[in-house]
Image 1 (cartoon, rainbow, N blue to C red):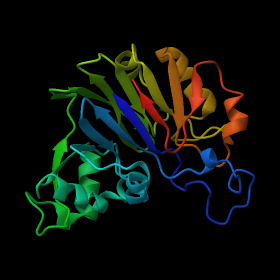
Image 2 (tube, rainbow, N blue to C red):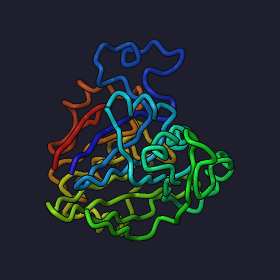
Image 3 (cartoon, rainbow, N blue to C red):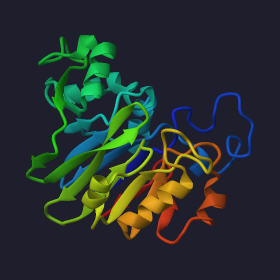
Length: 259
């Protein structure tokens, strides 16, 4: 299984507009964060999680040239705004609609923002077409299984995703944009080789886990390594990497893992 961190930043990104703090002006490329999204490859099955405003640029930077399945965790702007750029992948799958797996909230947001793209096929080559599907508890493919669970995120629930590759038995968990990890989600994550968790900033936040809460969730799940993502400009990569407990690391744009 291959895991590509396309983006690891918050809705404002880092550097932020009109900010001259030490992180926003840092020369450390690990502090340059586009909005959070992931690309996961299970035995050749390419799964994209969310499409940020920088989605096109992320794909060009990381040479993402194939997409079989798209999962929208929720309908907030930093996760949905790049979906129009999925049009190229509709071309690459033969002019078919791309299946979009999401929640009821996610479906409503796609319908309101991209009504022109809800179709069985693109209206013409180069256009987007989405076939909306409710994300089930388990999506079964010959390459493996993608399980889902709901995570609390303020006024909405987001999708937490658990990838299990059939050939290798490897397990990867992505729990971003959440205030806590419920008991059911902890149970589903147990036995994972790698876990990615929302770890917004040091200070508490009403809808996201802060660093302390994310580290506590990592300890409860007990994976060999957990990565924190959705990081604000309050997190300097080098400084905070030295502060984190053993087994917890900071993600950065372009990080690739092979399981």
